[in-house]
Each structure stands twice: as structure tokens, then as C-alpha cells.
Length: 209
Image 1 (spheres, rainbow, N blue to C red):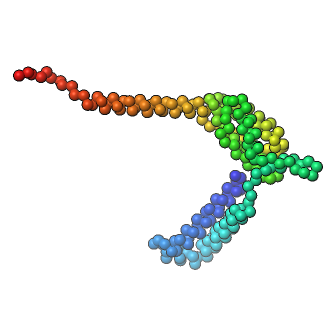
Image 2: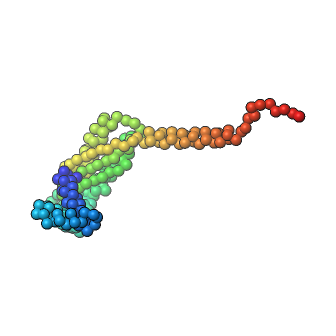
């Protein structure tokens, strides 16, 4: 998300909160009289009107996006003799997965493709290493291989390729095994204590009559 879109969403949210809060205070709570008296103050009233206009405009934009926005499933990568060559987002994601998993050291756990019909393609790959490795070296290698591999599918439409490395699979499995062993040891110790507490050892010799 670009900085401008993020700013617009923050302004829209704050304007909506202010409008609803100002109206709610005139109906509910012990501040109804004060909130109602503020409505006749010019500066407060103008500020409320501006926030209300921003809120209505934002709601209209969200409504139009929901009604008319279409999810892009194909990307135009080239034109040939008046025709066009398109590639699906699934094909781009599949190519990225193939590049990441080619040498067998990593798995692409998730691939997100952001593209417009005739715009640039952005690919984000979450990489799951099979074992601990040098992320800097491996990341640079995978980034270069992804650029080359995606160029074979998307041409020069690739704008950005980002990688996210998560916990190595082998380390996660060892951590899970260690946790299971620790739980088993604790359970065994608890059982041993339970049996031990039931044993009574006499400390003095008994006298026979």
C-alpha cells in the first residue's frame, strides 16, 4: 500500500470517528447538553461538516470499489500483430514456487502476486528453509533467480520481487521434539512424585509385646 493511500484511509477513519462521536454525544451520556451547545459554535460546526463530507466521500469510494472493481487474474505481457499475450496470476505464482524450490533447500510456503491488467507485476514470496542457512547470501541468490525466472514468464513487466524468510523447518521440528520431550519428562516426574508420596517409611523401631 502506498503512503498516499494509507494517509487517505487514516483521514477517512478519523473523520468518521469524529462525526459519529460528535453525534453520539448529543444523544447519550452526561455530556449531551455540552455536545449540543458545541453544535452552534461556528468553528465546531464547520469542522463537523468537513469531516462529514470526507466520510460520505470515502463511503462512496468504498461502495464503487465494491461494485465495479474486478480482481485481475491475467496480466498482459506482450502484444504480437495486434493481439496480446496474457499470463495468469496462478502461472506467475507457480513459476516463483518452481524457482524457489529448484535446488531443494527451500520451500515457497506462500506466494502473493499483485498485478494490474496492463501494469507492473509485484511478487512477494514467503520462503521456508529446510535447515538453517545464510539468509543474506541465499536471499540475494533467490532474488536474482526469481528476476530471471519471472522475466521468462512476464517479460519486462516485473516491478518488484520481495522475499520473506521464516523459521527453518528443521529447527521448528527440533523445537517441537524438544518441547514434547520436556512435557514427557515433566509428566514422568509428576507421576514419580505421586507414587512416592504414597509410601510411608517408619522412622522408629516398633516394640513387640
